[in-house]
Length: 134
Image 1 (cartoon, helix red, strand yellow):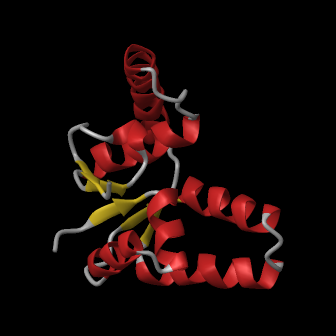
Image 2: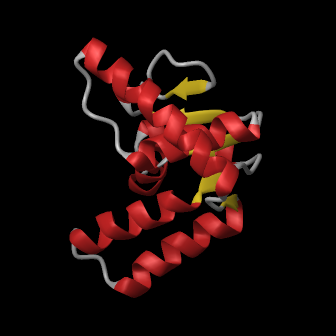
Image 3: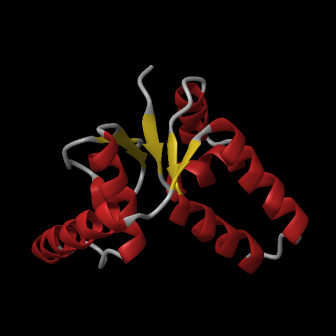
């Protein structure tokens, strides 16, 4: 399997062990990239759900040990801003949820690295360079 960029959705499915998570595990054998903002989103989600900080840290460390963590730099910041405007326009046209800046950073990471985004988020369904878990 080819390398992919993992979004928050993909990691959540992985950790709950769903059928979609099993598909994520298959991609994980090849490694890949996780945008740094995904780590922050996961930490927020799990702490909000009552996970102990140590357990959250273990999950984040697991991700960092299995994938490259893509930082937000100047080039990615500019690309994410451009991507955000495109995602926002598309979301309005299709009555989808409003994208977040994190969504734009994640998709821009895939575009900048040349890898496909692995996600089940309907915001990205049908876009170029996206593997949709459905």
